[in-house]
Image (cartoon, rainbow, N blue to C red):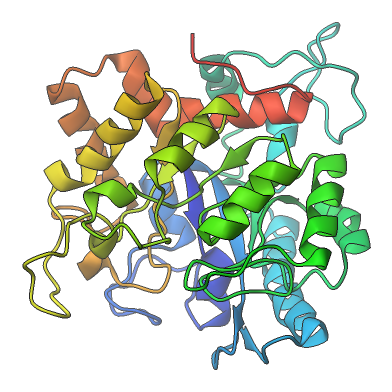
Length: 372
């Protein structure tokens, strides 16, 4: 079994000083105890991932830039992009996720770029079986907060360098959209960005959008939407918490053929009611998988959920669910799902198949299909 993790802040970890080529050192900065290096991802059979360019308006670290300063945001984001381009040139990772996820129908030849007319996606399992094992990690780049994109007409430049998805804001608002800590919607520049993303078939990530921005995106675009690393708002005891998805949003993502990535931050998995402020208790596997089952119940199947761990994305391994301290231990999720009656095919779909189906269809220019 291989994994597709839809949210890993790999460049953020690198620019903050972690040696991503070294064997896992639990004391590695930032956010020890650490869980993620390229070696630990390989150990955990993470073969496909969305790797982020994460920048923070008003932040003080190497990912930060002054609020509203698009030029500085570009430089900060560009530095993280160069991390991935360097790793690619060193043959430690492969970029352009789409190139591995479909073939031209007449010849069966694997094709890159976006110029192939209506290529036919293969099954998720056949794609997984033929995935090159060298390098071990195949990435698409997700821009988490669109401020590094100085203007919508620069999008093609980012796409040529491996960007395949964009979340227009982080928790704080960007020049394009309201983040989940605000009530802002889309700006005029944000609406222009949406149109250009749709023209280029770049995927929208709704994980950090405010409710208003999410609704305005849905009103403006008919394209697929993912939530790369969000959980179920209804299970967290806080109906005003825009960081996670309302039932309406879950249904809308599924209606468009999208997939929701399970976030493994314990605070985002357990109901905080009755806990002491700042409680560090870890979520149980049962609490974790309650989010998966809720999504499946709302969407009428098991085709719209996968992993978006956010592992080491601003928090340490000590805040992952009980028993999970590194990528290799996410198999605990599969064991628990199997005990709950999930079939081998359904376990494959959760681990990687649902995300593979989604991206193979997006690359082919069609609506993501239901699992078969």
